[in-house]
Structure formats: structure tokens, C-alpha cells
Image (tube, rainbow, N blue to C red; front, side, top):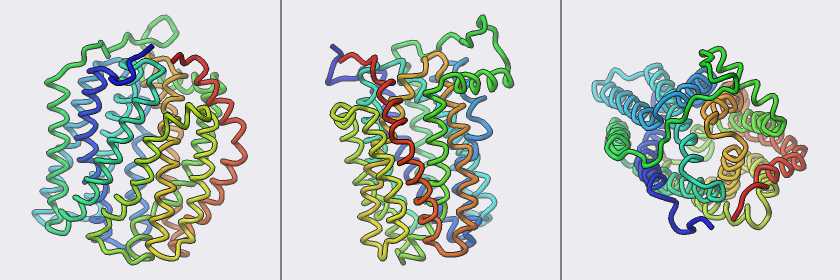
Length: 412
């Protein structure tokens, strides 16, 4: 019987680092769209900002995943956070010296996105090594809770108020957070070895970049359960990104929110995500991982339509609480599913490959969403949510089956 109170010192190190990083992320991810809206009101460029934060998953997820499988994963975490700190400092300096423009912001967000691929892939690859499979939901839930509390309840409101004081201030704060995280990982090594032997099922020979791409994509293609869930999440993710690409403009212009309270609105939305993070392990235990996934994905898609119909800021925020609950629960159960199905020694590449597919198409959805929004800021939510709902309902039986297969070997 695994320890039900402690997840171990290695996990606690990851969790503490996550708390600090999520604070920096929450500050940066609110400040960036606020800065973008101050530089341009072009919905296409605002959509491009969202796209460039996701585009690195298309270009770099598999090679970064191969790098993570080959290297000391602790060093990878340090490198990713250090580079994010440097870029954040450059943004803050460019604002202070008044030479910032929308293109500098877009390029910087792209580079930060590349680092996020590295840090996220590494963190998800480490987790199956430091936790028992029966604790996957608990570990992912705790990380999700820390993300919501720190990024949305602390980082987002703090970023909004810092931005109101000085536009550069949120970027200086985020830089400090990334530097502290890198130092923490550097000073306190993991107790367990998280530098696995490189494995490719072809005699251990390193394949090179192209070979790793072929291997990872081939693995997903041969595993029909992973392939099916990747296809479903890719389709849904595309239409979600189409819906949400112009969310800052929708909130600020259509719903007439003040920029200084933008972070407070996101924090209120985070109530649902926090509740979902707490509830996910219980939902998995009560309904089964498969039913939990299917129900929450369907409800989340329906709520995207409701968002586009929201008549005012109050109704929008209430709907967003439900969206936050369902998406948070889905994310926790989905990560536990992948961590159960993918071998730890292959996780970097396979995780990178599926993120390449799923997140790689999201930037295209974001750009299309920007063009759709030229016909009205509500239109992306109605179209994206409508198509996503149809896909989710159609896939319910398959999601239940795959979720239950992933959980069948868990011993309590």
C-alpha cells in the first residue's frame, strides 16, 4: 500500500519548483496579452500571439523529447528556466527603454514557448519515475492545484496590478521567478536517478533526429489506444484554440472589462479549475478514469458555446468557472492516462510526438480564430465550441474504453 500522505522528497522538489515557476508564468502570461493589446488592436496579430506560444510544440516537441530521454533531466529543467529568465529580462529592458513593439513581443513569446516545451516535457517525464502508478492522479492533481492557486489566484491579479503601476514590472518579476526555480533545481538534486538509459527498441543505437521523429510517430501509430486519444484531443484542441485566440479582446472590448481588473477576472475563473483539481482523483475513483474523461470533455465543449452567448461579464465569469472545472479535471486524468500507457524510458519522445500533433495544430486554429473574429468577437466561440461538442459526443464510448484500459493495472 503506497503512502497516502506523502508523495516523496523528489516529488516535493518538483512541486516547490512548480509553485515558483507557476507564479512567474501567471505574471508573464497575463502581462503579455495586455502589452500586446496596448501595441495593436489587430485581432490577427492578437491571435498570432496565442499561436506563437503554441507553435514551438509543432517544431521542437519531438527533438526536445529525444534530448530529454538522453540527458540528465535535472539539467534540462535548469536550462529551460534560465533561458526563460533571460528572455523575460530582455522584454522588461525593451519596455523600460521604450523600443518595444509587437514583433519583439511575438518573437520573445515564441522563444519562451520553446523553453516551456523543454520544461513541461521534462517535468512530465520525471513524474512517472518518482511516483507509483497508483499515485499518478494525486501527483498530477497536486501540481494542477499549485498551478491554479499560484498562477491564477496570485500571479494573474498581481500581474494586472503591477502592469497598472509600470508596464515593465511584471516582466521583471517573472524573470526573478524563473531564476529562483533554476537555482532551486541546481542546488537540490533528486534522490532517484532521473537520467534513464536511452531506449528505442532497436538495439539501443541512437537514431538521430530524423530517426527519433520516425520512431516516436511510429510508436503512436502502432499503439491504437494512444493513437485514438491523440486524434480526439488534436481535433478538440484545434477548435478550442480557434475559440480562445481572441479571448483578451473579447473580455476587454466585447465585455468592457478594465485592463487593471483583467487578472482578477482570470482569478475568479480559476475557482473552477481549482475545484476540478481537487475533485479529479475522486472523480476517477468514483466514475472510473474513462467516464471521468468523457463527461468532462463533453461539458467543457458545450461551455465554449455558452461563452460565446454570454451577455455580460458576470455571466461570462460564471460560465468560465464551469469551463475551468471540466478542463482541469480532463487535464489531470489525461496526463495520468498517458503516464500509465507510455514507458518511462520512452516518455520524452512519445510525449513530445503527441504534443507535436495535438499542440502543433493549435497555432493554426488560433490564427484562423483571429480571421473569424473579424466577423464578430463572439463568432469563434460559437463555431469552435459547436464543432468541439460534436466531436466530444461522438467520441464518448472510445474515450471511456481507453481511459479504463489505462487504469486497469493500478493497484491501490
